[in-house]
Length: 587
Image (cartoon, rainbow, N blue to C red):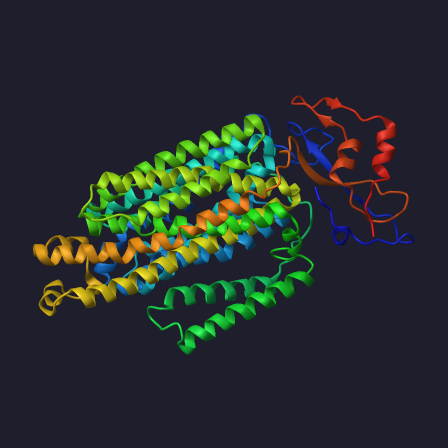
């Protein structure tokens, strides 16, 4: 692990003796000599993992459940022009909340935050289920996103609290499989609700799942307790990251559609984004507990995986957010059937994510999986750009299956690489920071693709529809799959072709992002996956009376590891202990 001088706590030789921060390597369950809560009791890992999976399912399901219900929702609420915000509002709120949950999780522990996040998410679901108009619906999605950001980050970070990196690959692979499952179950449920009891059940379904996840969090999450005292909140960083992220999303959502790119409002928002981003960096460099520490970017693996994750996020959500709508409009499928058409992508992603995770845990090698996955994503996006409403539906399903293979090889392994780069005391912050930029990509993907799609569709309707046809079709803002299916044959063909021509070229435009991600990931440094969990604990003060930090290597030499029964597995000779103490880093 790389340790930087400014990370060491300052001390004075004349100052009173202060505790030293050492690192304990957990090789098994907690022992009397370990920090309280340093490892979970035997027999609790499975229910713990189930609880975390339910929390992650709750969040990931709501990124996809509205994709098939969206055409009907916006048609009933007369809000096709605001369609992009049903998806973007959730992702935007999730993106802003992620680094806050990550930092607070490192400071106060993850269990209370997870319970809070689930409760907020359920509250947003109630508001959405009762929403009378598009405005209220979008507000509900924002509230859901504020809870969803915690569900995603805290689930991933909590696994790092109890499972060493070498074994974590198989767990991260299953987490990727949960997202893959939700990517199909979401559209399928959304379609079934739309065709059956009504789209509002896409909100109500969250309540029983949320109750189960909440009970699992309360009963089974036995995570390390906070030993760092009261948290220090980075209020300035929180405010600036919210302003910068919102300004960026508004630019990409409104630019070129609602407003011209040269409109003073768009230019002003772009300037606000730049100013807020610069101010955020300056604040983070000076605050005591930064939301996103700038020292993270000194690690090459963090930088490469973060940029690549952003690129992959753009491609993934650009396709996921609008493919079910495309299948309904262009191929005339019912909402539930359009959800079923996403199964090839889910199956491929589930299999490759799980298998690659198992292989990483078995062999300890991970570098080339995300490289290959990124190349496959680029190929899949290029093929999706060739879709045509007159070709068989199975062709589109094949392309989606290929995209699922690429995503399964990439997504969760990148998170594992980040977690393996930093000590356990920074895992939440590092994981949240990495996911923040990936969610920026998701936000850009959904908002850019959505705004470009809506603008291109409006232009194509204007160019191709005769005046009489426009009258037959009615208000474009109220266009639903049922309305399109009832149009005369000549007009129907014009509409579905316009839908296809408006969306598919955008996939080709974002395909190079997959290639860029693959090239960047080739420069990853293959670091050995940790086989123990290292925790900082307070020990007796050194004779120098200075507060210092012991490197992980020195701590492993000083404090013996223990086997699965809690017995000393290997003890370092006294000479090694003396050498370890001399390796103390202090300023």
